[in-house]
Length: 247
Image (cartoon, rainbow, N blue to C red; front, side, top):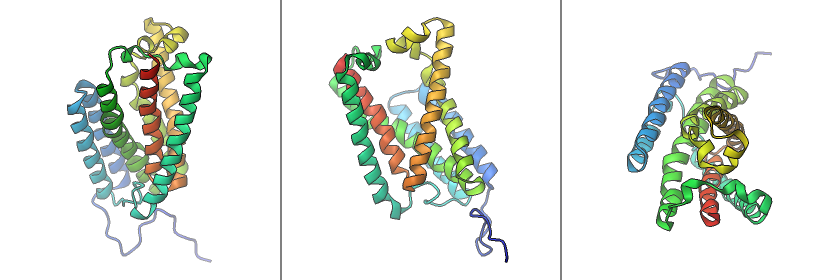
C-alpha cells in the first residue's frame, strides 16, 4: 500500500509559498524580539500601537509561509467553539481567584505594591485595553497562533508546543526583572538582593513556560485561538482586579 503523505505536505496543485517554514519562524522571532523591547521601553499607548503592528506583521509572515487562518487558530468555523471554551475558562479563573481572596492563607499572594496608587479608571484601562490588546492579542497571536501553527504544520503538535512554550517563557524575562520587589510574596521567598532578582526571573520564565504548555493544549483541543485568549485575559485582568480590591 502507498504511504500516506504527512499532514504538513504541500498538495501538488498548491503553489510554493514565498518563504519556507524555517524562514517564517526566524522572521517571527525577529518581530517578537523588536516588539518585546519596544513594549517595555514605551508602555501605554505607544505599546498598544506596537502590539497591533506586530500582530499584523506576524499574520503577514504566516501568510507568506503558506499558513492559513486555521493554522493561526482563527478559522471562522471554530470561533464559536473557541468562544464557549473561553467563557468557561474565565468563569473557572474567577472562581479560583475568589476562593484565593477569601482564604487568609492565600490572600497575600495577590499583594502587589504596584496597586497602591492605582485608581478605578486605571484598573479599567488595564483590564479592558492594555491586557487584551497589549498583552493577550500579541502574545496569543505570536505564540499559540503563528509560531504554533508554523511549527505544527511542519513538525507536529508536540514540537510546536515545546518551541512555543520555551519561547513564551523567555519572552517574560524583561517583565520579571522587578518582580521580587513588586510582589511581597515573591520577595519573601527569594529575597530582594541581586540573587533574589535572578531567582524571581528564572521562576517566572519556568512558570510561564509551563503555562504556555497549557495554553497550547487548549489551542489544540479547542482548535481555536479564542480558548487560550480567554484564559490568558482572565488570569491577568482578574488578577489585577483581585489585587486592587485587596490592597
